[in-house]
Length: 381
Image (cartoon, rainbow, N blue to C red; front, side):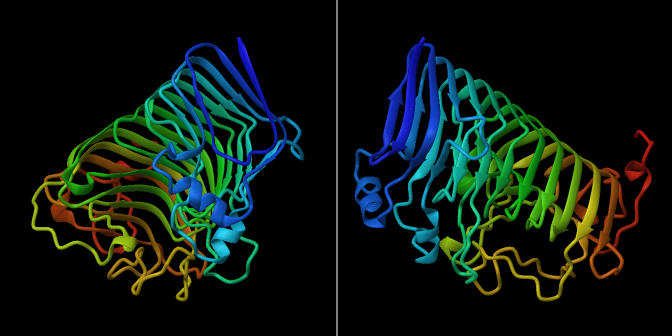
């Protein structure tokens, strides 16, 4: 077994091309270089692999941090980037790609610049007991930790558990090609939820299968469970379950859209395509919590007017929003949903009945949340 021990400042990017049993351990505090201009020169280079730490290929690879909660942190010095709102040539954090039988455990990331763990093309991965703290200490709302996604799951047969993530983007994002992904027993705060996608950008063909997300606490996030695909996309996402989700101060606990867009690319696209990424066998089960329905709600990633997360006609009290196209969704159900609003006003939903063909667990309408037979506890349909 080869062993790498990383300690101290990491003045340049670290790339490991792996081919055998590897054990990589972070035993002391590690740090990115502080000056932004040093990053820009490195990341802007044609030779930059995409991430500050890149682990690629190999079998039986372990990436391990210290079990001491006060030791072994990787300091990304992201605050300087957030303060200046610099979104050019930002380094991704840790790429753990094309690895078979991998482990990521006890890693601790402090103020990472953007994007944390990516697992593209890996198989049989177990990521547990990791901690990400991407929280701005600047009271200016413009100093927001953009794109600080926690885990970007791309690959097959992956278990993520007992992770703690505070960030400004997706806690989990499952990308095209992902199969048999299990995310459980974790905590997410301040970000954009437990997401599938985005899928189908530019008409691409998506393929996501067999995803289970369960036993997760969502605190002050923009979304709880989220699916996002672009108009004009192709392919299929199927057999996806979000179960036992506890939420507090969440604006959109359950949100499904086939009209996703990126505010950094301009206004929503005017697409005349009738194609859409199809969804099949989606279950949202046992969601319990409180909706943030403040009339003055604002989330720091908003840089457009209206904000990119604005939903025309929404009241802010919606526990479920199904923004679907006709003939694209099969067997989508929200079951055992127990929600209240911070204001005490009635919980609502948004759903176009012409876009669904099954009992979705509530009366499909733009209005008050009324559970139906498929959405009631103890009733199997």
